[in-house]
Length: 315
Image (cartoon, rainbow, N blue to C red; front, top):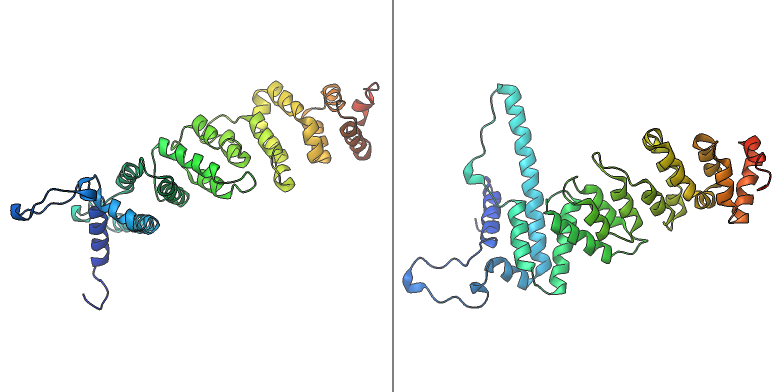
């Protein structure tokens, strides 16, 4: 109504109709033969309506899709809750959704936008990847693995190693199975916090123990790097299932662990590697300063003093 607000569900219906029109693959020609003309320009291309909208303002057009997805997902959740309540109250199956309420879903939106942006200029593709990243982070969209990998790669290319927040948020929001692990790792290569998420593994995936330690040690923030000790202590299942691999891996990084936090490194040696003092000493002897620092804590803390003291040549 002119001068008023849409009511009675009209707003949702209009939104669905607009989205349906934008996702039309072909230009809708007049049913009257007398009004038909040969299609030219954008009208002759696939998805002419969304192309026209993107030409006017790509950011605004993608914002429109974002709002639509968020509203649609909220409405879907509300409907599911209402149906569950009806089932509990009436002990009957929920009524099926009215076919008239069917709307363009996220899968269709992805298909349309991929087709439209494929071969576009760098600026428009950048808008698109940013849109996909936002929707993935908000869990409003499911994308095929290829598009997920491309989006992760775009995020990695646009974020420095010291500012990985958005990339990390997107990765944490991704459901397991929405990407191929090795390809995702390749896409975020050089961004250690993102790599940690993937190297740790999800839903039964095997943790890449050594790679995770290496990524923690590569971080520029000391407060974050020290979390490596919590990770190592939390990997007791690896220690219990393959003690040799666990010890060899920790030992290979032991000099770096001492530099991060000598007291915590001594705690690791005391908890898991009390029988490996000779190997620890040999590893640390490559850097006399690190060896001195470690042995100073051994003496001060009175931990493993008898075992390290027996390695008199190194002391």
